[in-house]
Length: 162
Image 1 (cartoon, rainbow, N blue to C red):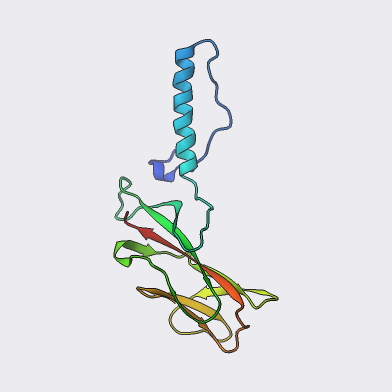
Image 2: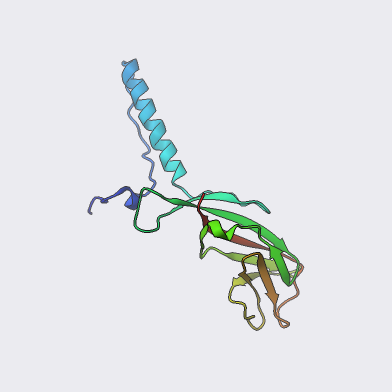
Protein backbone atom coordinates (compact mmCIF):
# COMPACT_ATOMS: atom_id res chain seq x y z
CA UNK A 1 0.00 0.00 0.00
CA UNK A 2 1.32 3.44 -0.86
CA UNK A 3 1.45 6.36 1.53
CA UNK A 4 -1.02 9.16 0.73
CA UNK A 5 0.73 12.03 -1.03
CA UNK A 6 -1.29 14.77 0.64
CA UNK A 7 -3.67 15.21 3.54
CA UNK A 8 -6.75 15.14 1.24
CA UNK A 9 -6.18 11.42 0.70
CA UNK A 10 -5.97 10.56 4.38
CA UNK A 11 -9.08 9.30 6.15
CA UNK A 12 -10.05 11.03 9.38
CA UNK A 13 -8.93 8.00 11.37
CA UNK A 14 -8.22 8.39 15.07
CA UNK A 15 -5.82 5.90 16.61
CA UNK A 16 -7.21 3.94 19.55
CA UNK A 17 -4.07 3.90 21.71
CA UNK A 18 -1.85 6.75 22.85
CA UNK A 19 1.22 6.25 25.03
CA UNK A 20 1.35 9.08 27.59
CA UNK A 21 4.48 9.45 29.74
CA UNK A 22 3.74 8.97 33.44
CA UNK A 23 6.98 10.26 34.94
CA UNK A 24 7.60 13.44 32.92
CA UNK A 25 5.11 16.29 33.40
CA UNK A 26 6.55 18.36 30.53
CA UNK A 27 6.44 15.34 28.20
CA UNK A 28 2.90 14.51 29.34
CA UNK A 29 1.78 18.09 28.66
CA UNK A 30 3.32 17.95 25.18
CA UNK A 31 1.65 14.61 24.38
CA UNK A 32 -1.75 15.85 25.64
CA UNK A 33 -1.44 18.92 23.39
CA UNK A 34 -0.59 16.76 20.37
CA UNK A 35 -3.39 14.28 21.11
CA UNK A 36 -5.96 17.09 21.52
CA UNK A 37 -5.04 18.62 18.16
CA UNK A 38 -5.17 15.17 16.54
CA UNK A 39 -8.60 14.41 18.07
CA UNK A 40 -10.03 17.82 17.16
CA UNK A 41 -8.79 17.68 13.57
CA UNK A 42 -10.12 14.13 13.05
CA UNK A 43 -13.51 14.94 14.59
CA UNK A 44 -13.80 18.13 12.53
CA UNK A 45 -13.03 16.16 9.35
CA UNK A 46 -16.12 14.01 9.75
CA UNK A 47 -19.54 14.81 8.31
CA UNK A 48 -21.83 16.37 10.89
CA UNK A 49 -25.14 14.55 11.21
CA UNK A 50 -27.24 17.50 12.37
CA UNK A 51 -30.36 18.41 10.39
CA UNK A 52 -32.29 21.62 11.09
CA UNK A 53 -35.63 22.78 9.78
CA UNK A 54 -35.64 26.31 8.37
CA UNK A 55 -32.05 27.30 9.08
CA UNK A 56 -28.73 26.13 7.62
CA UNK A 57 -26.27 23.89 9.45
CA UNK A 58 -22.62 23.32 8.49
CA UNK A 59 -22.25 19.72 7.25
CA UNK A 60 -18.57 19.36 8.05
CA UNK A 61 -17.82 18.58 4.41
CA UNK A 62 -15.03 20.49 2.71
CA UNK A 63 -15.08 21.07 -1.05
CA UNK A 64 -11.94 21.90 -2.99
CA UNK A 65 -12.39 23.72 -6.28
CA UNK A 66 -9.60 24.58 -8.68
CA UNK A 67 -7.22 21.99 -7.28
CA UNK A 68 -6.19 24.04 -4.25
CA UNK A 69 -6.12 22.30 -0.89
CA UNK A 70 -5.49 25.62 0.85
CA UNK A 71 -8.95 27.13 0.42
CA UNK A 72 -11.70 24.62 1.11
CA UNK A 73 -15.32 25.70 1.02
CA UNK A 74 -17.89 24.43 3.51
CA UNK A 75 -21.21 22.95 2.59
CA UNK A 76 -24.45 23.75 4.37
CA UNK A 77 -27.60 21.68 4.87
CA UNK A 78 -31.16 22.78 5.51
CA UNK A 79 -34.44 20.89 5.80
CA UNK A 80 -37.68 22.33 4.41
CA UNK A 81 -41.21 21.08 5.11
CA UNK A 82 -44.05 20.95 2.60
CA UNK A 83 -47.67 19.80 2.42
CA UNK A 84 -48.25 19.65 -1.32
CA UNK A 85 -47.32 21.12 -4.67
CA UNK A 86 -46.04 24.69 -4.73
CA UNK A 87 -43.13 26.96 -3.95
CA UNK A 88 -41.04 26.86 -0.80
CA UNK A 89 -38.89 30.00 -0.39
CA UNK A 90 -35.39 28.68 0.37
CA UNK A 91 -33.70 31.95 1.40
CA UNK A 92 -30.34 30.86 -0.03
CA UNK A 93 -28.18 33.65 -1.40
CA UNK A 94 -27.28 32.00 -4.70
CA UNK A 95 -24.66 34.64 -5.52
CA UNK A 96 -22.56 33.19 -2.67
CA UNK A 97 -23.20 29.56 -3.68
CA UNK A 98 -20.61 27.58 -5.61
CA UNK A 99 -22.73 24.47 -6.00
CA UNK A 100 -26.09 23.05 -4.97
CA UNK A 101 -24.82 19.54 -4.82
CA UNK A 102 -26.06 16.04 -5.38
CA UNK A 103 -27.35 15.64 -1.84
CA UNK A 104 -30.78 17.06 -2.46
CA UNK A 105 -33.51 14.63 -1.49
CA UNK A 106 -36.79 14.26 0.30
CA UNK A 107 -39.63 12.08 1.44
CA UNK A 108 -43.33 12.47 2.08
CA UNK A 109 -46.28 10.59 3.48
CA UNK A 110 -49.87 10.17 2.41
CA UNK A 111 -50.75 9.50 6.04
CA UNK A 112 -50.16 5.76 5.72
CA UNK A 113 -47.03 5.08 3.64
CA UNK A 114 -43.78 6.97 3.05
CA UNK A 115 -42.43 7.77 -0.42
CA UNK A 116 -39.31 9.38 -1.88
CA UNK A 117 -39.29 12.83 -3.44
CA UNK A 118 -37.13 13.00 -6.56
CA UNK A 119 -34.68 15.87 -7.22
CA UNK A 120 -35.52 16.42 -10.84
CA UNK A 121 -35.99 18.95 -13.61
CA UNK A 122 -38.91 21.32 -14.01
CA UNK A 123 -40.71 18.58 -15.95
CA UNK A 124 -42.85 16.38 -13.72
CA UNK A 125 -42.52 12.60 -13.69
CA UNK A 126 -45.64 10.46 -14.05
CA UNK A 127 -46.83 9.14 -10.69
CA UNK A 128 -44.11 10.93 -8.70
CA UNK A 129 -43.53 13.91 -6.44
CA UNK A 130 -40.49 15.84 -7.64
CA UNK A 131 -38.73 19.10 -6.90
CA UNK A 132 -36.23 21.50 -8.42
CA UNK A 133 -34.52 24.68 -7.24
CA UNK A 134 -34.94 28.17 -8.71
CA UNK A 135 -33.07 31.31 -7.59
CA UNK A 136 -35.72 31.94 -4.92
CA UNK A 137 -37.71 28.74 -4.34
CA UNK A 138 -37.82 25.00 -4.09
CA UNK A 139 -40.60 24.06 -6.50
CA UNK A 140 -42.52 20.91 -5.57
CA UNK A 141 -44.46 19.21 -8.37
CA UNK A 142 -47.04 16.53 -7.58
CA UNK A 143 -48.18 14.44 -10.54
CA UNK A 144 -51.88 13.58 -10.56
CA UNK A 145 -51.13 9.84 -10.35
CA UNK A 146 -48.86 10.23 -7.27
CA UNK A 147 -50.15 9.36 -3.80
CA UNK A 148 -51.64 12.37 -2.02
CA UNK A 149 -49.18 14.44 0.02
CA UNK A 150 -50.04 14.86 3.70
CA UNK A 151 -46.64 16.17 4.76
CA UNK A 152 -43.06 15.94 3.63
CA UNK A 153 -39.51 17.20 3.97
CA UNK A 154 -36.86 18.18 1.45
CA UNK A 155 -33.19 18.43 2.35
CA UNK A 156 -30.86 20.66 0.35
CA UNK A 157 -27.09 20.82 0.66
CA UNK A 158 -25.01 23.51 -1.00
CA UNK A 159 -21.44 24.77 -1.03
CA UNK A 160 -21.23 28.36 0.10
CA UNK A 161 -18.50 30.96 -0.09
CA UNK A 162 -18.44 32.17 3.50
